[in-house]
Length: 336
Image (cartoon, rainbow, N blue to C red; front, side, top):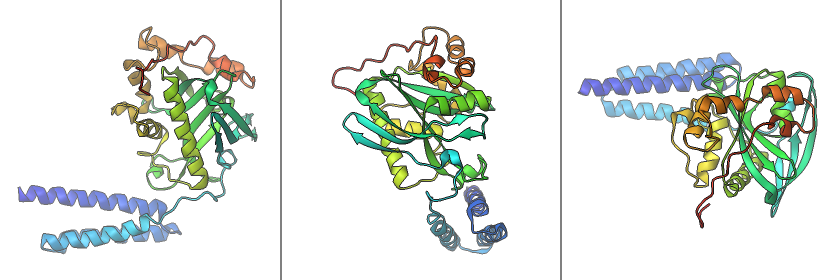
């Protein structure tokens, strides 16, 4: 039993050393040779302590000191808003709230000729919460079917749609890496955009498979979720935060907004393997369940309609052609 306990402890230490070394490799001081040297020194020091220091109390104390030094550096790696950003994430939106009146500044509405060739257009949009009629979820697939990018969108009776895509904020010349996404390499960014920008970019120019799920969310909840998004948008405008591929990504951030308001949201493996999130929503009756799931899912595919609409100002309406929002959930009196 003692041997098993020691072995488990040693494995845990080695894994922790590996993670800390990877953090130094990706995020440590430049040049890269210096960061890698520090990573190697950390691993070597940890292994020496693990193998040579006895008794166990001294081993534990030495390791705690070693990891504390690393942690002191790690917590001081701070996000920033003043980097040399790529043009599509150069501005952070912020929102003025006046009762039901929301004025969004720097809403992205780029005119694309290709994924990398576009005319920049940043606009101000004013939305009236009293005209909110629904909330939608876009799921965009670019590779493995088990993983998707999720985008929330709110619909209003005056025909406006506001989409918010939670992404990484990349510097010029920087590419996304799922591995680097664990190690403070990207700030988190709320793309506040017209659907003709953020959806058409994926369907018409990136060639991603995009599905539009109209949700049965009560209007009161859709309103509260949007206002919580607004709070985060304003916070990020004032104070940046790190993106994390596991805990602060496009889908986990959505669930955090929902749960923070006390709205029930299940613990389900499909939140991580989020390409299957639509299946979970169907099982729970959050989307249209009038037909078998494969039929409903096929109907939500918007690529053909998006390509036909292209630059049409009525892009949002046209990608919804043939779709009918399922009846909204009616909450019992006194609940929200």
